[in-house]
Image 1: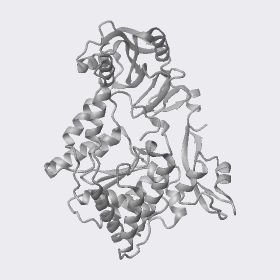
Image 2: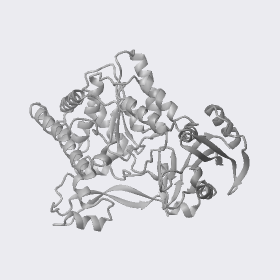
Image 3: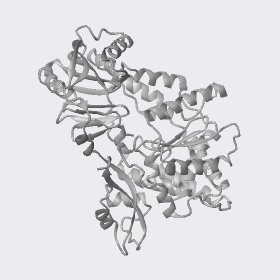
Image 4: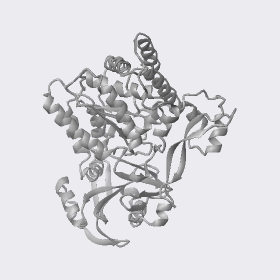
Length: 487
């Protein structure tokens, strides 16, 4: 899902949580279902975040509410949100929370397409589709994997030879429980019927599916694995089936909310494409979290990455690791360290010492642990930055510990408040509408606009052929790199 996400230890994919939450089970009461969905909605908002731009979020809500007025289930109060995900995705909760990612919005070219995908997710809710795994069990697995001591416990487990790989795989299998092919087909049909009743062309879903099929083939199966419809029936099959179903629907066009393509693109203007730097970003090997005022230089030459609430790096042989993540809201690193030790049920602070790192209060501990895979060196650190304590864990096998411990500790020693110079190095990519010149080709427009997409990506995202000849003033959406902070 996240292009820069490194799957450290017991860190679970957010998509796994969302997939597990997408419908109810027959054994749960309606009240239990709603209570569970409300908890998951809070979890989604906290871990992924929601797009707050009223032009973007308000437009999606307006389209969704027009669909909701024609829904068959009157016991559901539908709500529509844009989730802050770079990948193309959409999902729903059994109580009527419907989410579409900003990554998917970037591929949409008409209001009918947006109505189609929202209708599809509503179709799952309308049909009471079950999950293959009980939500309570899925939630328990996520809570365990994402606990405050999860990373430290996973490093210790790996050193003991009972590494997190096995538990992580088991959690994924439990959580990534897709709808059946027939349920997906039913959601397609119900979504198209719903869109048509609300006054939108039911072919919109077919057009969007065709775009997603092109994007899937461009990215390849591995890159697409966490995207929308990755586990659904094959794209060409669904494009054909939805087109055939749309041809059978009699519908009356309604008044569009966005009156034309220019209006649609204006509503999506400024949509973030790719990483949202506010959640954290890598500039070279330096991880910066501008909203929380933090920066740290990760080991040079290591495989670095970041995801929901963490950053880290692996050594080239993938045997040594450094992980950074928030550990608690406090100014006292000792208090958070002791709480984490209590939750882990392991003596983590036996030789811990207080330190100052670049003027920041810190607690530092180094351990040696042994297990089936041999001896490991382990360092645990808690550092106060503002009103938040950051946990930094590093581990290296004994065979390389002398060198890797120096590398890891040198990285830890760079943690510091973010500076104005750091902020000036951060940029952001936003979607903009670029008018073409008469007879212009996509390659030329890409160079002229400074698009971060290549010509193939621009063609797919705009529903055009790769060799399309553009007309004067034709609006083409492209992502462009801009300063994150005003100069």
